[in-house]
Image (cartoon, rainbow, N blue to C red; front, side):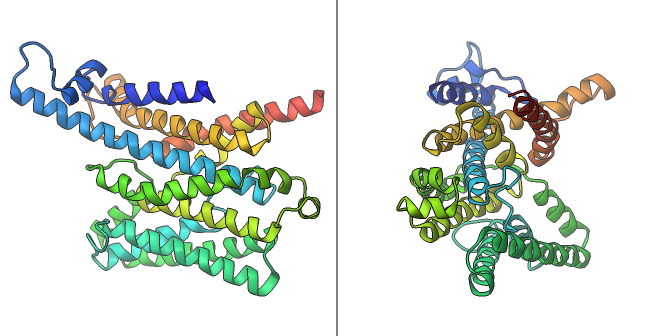
Length: 346
């Protein structure tokens, strides 16, 4: 845990100095505290401060999103007793994407609570999907893991179909906005958006960590957990509620970012074990570290590609969802192979 916190502090400190414009870490933080390089003009100092502000806001956004997705992934995997479960298992990402697409079609650029139209539409879409999944699962089958997953998959497919229909109706500019949003991004030009989501994210973090002792019993089976005094039904509702709240906040803020909620909890579980009192906070810390490092790659890969192949320097960053998937998929496969080899030899 201590090592993870130290690593997080280091990557947060280094992050403002990384990008297509090499301003350096010391110069970046110096612009915040009012001391710049010798001979630096006021115009140059203001440019450095602006770059610092943009990069720091990206870093904060990546930290919040990575921490939340890792926590939600760990809780969801235990809830459904499946290491392949993700925060999007219940169709939340599809609902958020549909809500964002509808807001784009309706032209809601800025609407309600100071949030961008896509963010508010995604938040409402996520809430609608979670409510519908819980209603269907609780009414038709009872609140069980299989019924929740089946309901989530069905509603997710429906939302995906409606998203394709909405994209079909959109014009070229609207299609571009929808596609870019679906790729995921931690790019934000102000601190206001991530800080607006900090409150509900913190509530979801506290709720999931508080459920840790109950999750230790739940992973042994519902009957055994109930015999040990755990109110299984209430615990399941709390798990789903807090995980859905956190996931909805991330989707509305950054779009659907894959593999963080799948890879990080699985990796941390291999290192620290299955005690959720330790697993959850450690996974949250390393989720933030992982997404910040992926944001570094999103900034630097276009620059490296331009220097190596085209001779041109690009300041445009890749969508972070592309980077997390490209990094996460092979790493997760390697972890699965290693885990299987350990089980076979042990």
